[in-house]
Image (tube, helix red, strand yellow):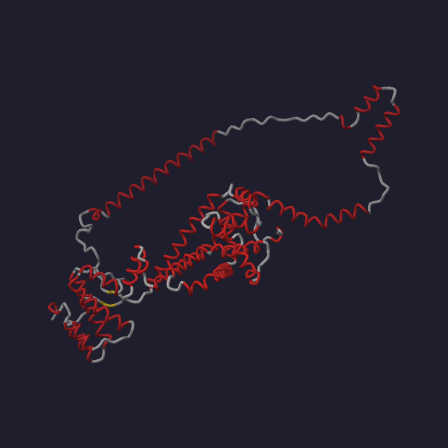
Length: 491
C-alpha cells in the first residue's frame, strides 16, 4: 500500500461524506465496474440460463445469491485503483476463482444476509484477517458508521425493486395495442402468488429487470462500503497525517543533503561555543576566588542567567457594548418581528383570498356558477372538431369521399365528426390534449351507448392513420351506415 500514490484526498470525513467518496470512486470507472460485475456473474449465468430457461425468476434468485462474488471483483478493482494501479482484465480473471471460493461457507451462507457486507468484506479481502482478529477488526470499524452502513443496505434493497419496477413500467408503455390486458392479468397473477400462470415473457422481463437493478445498486453499494472503510482507517490509523509527513520528508530530502554537506565542509578551527566559554569562566572564577565565598557568589549572580526580568501584565477589562450597539440590536430584533408578522399576515390573507376566489369548489358538485365545468375544445389531436367546420351530412359526405379515392380525408371526416357530436351531446368531456386511447376511455365512461361504434371507428382510423392499412370498402360502408348520430344530421 503506497499512500503517496493515492488518487483521492485522504482526510477524516463524516460518515455520509465517506459514502459520497465511495460513490465518486464508483462513478469514475462506472463502465469498467459494470463489466467486472457481469464478469463475476458469468460462471453461473451461462449454465443456468440454459438449465432454468423455463424458470426465469429462479434464475434471478440464484444470481442474487451469487452477487458477493461480483462485489469482490468490484472491490478488487476499487482498492487498487485508489492507490494508482489500474488492474488489467487478465488480473481480474485471475482474481475470479479466488473471489468465488474464498471463505465460501462464511460469505455465501453464514453471513450472506449481513447488512454490513460492503464494509466487512473489505476487512476480509483486503486485510486477509480471519477468526478472532477478523472479529476484533470489524467491531473496531463498526464503532463509527454502524447506522450509516445499515441505511445504505436499506436504500440498496429499495432501489433494486424501484429500478426493476421502473423497467417493467417503461416496457409496458411500448406494448402493442391489445396486449395491455394480458400483461395486467400477468401482474395480478404475480402479486397473487400464482406464478405458474405468469407468461414466460413477463417472467423473463421481470428477471432481467431485477438483474439490472442488482447490478447498478451493487456496484455503488460496494463503492459506498469501500469509502466508509477507507474513512475508518483514516480516522483510526491517521493516514492523512502519515501522508503529510511522507510528503514533507520528500520535500526535505534535498535540503537535508545540502545541510550535511555544509557541516562537513566547515573549518575545524573556530571560536569556541558559548557553553564552553561559560564553563571556562566558571572554572577561572573558582580558581581565582576559591578562598572568598562572598566574592564567588557575587560574581556568579552577575551572570546573565541570574538576571531578573520584570513583565507588566495588564488585566483585560470586561467589554461593555456601547449604548448605540444595544439600540441597533434592539432595532434589528424589532424589525425582524415586524417582518415575521407581516409575512404571517400576508400568508393568512392569501389563503383567505384563495378560499374566496375558488369558493365554488366547496359547493355541491364543485362547479362554478354560470360557467361550464370544462371548456369545449375546438381542436383535438390537431383535428378540427368545431361544429361549423362539419358538413350537414357527415357520413354521407365521408362515403362519397371514400368512393372517389380520398380515403384518408374520408376517414378523418368521419372520426372528427363523431368526436364533435360526442362533445356536443354533453356527455363526454374530451380535452384538447387527449389521444385516441384517451378519447376511447372517456367515451366508455360517459357514453356507453356509443362505446361499441366508437371503438370500431377508432381502430379503423388508427390502422389507416398510423399503419397505412386501408379498411375494406364494406367496413367503411358499415361505419357510415351505422353512424349513431344519423337522426341528428343537419340540413
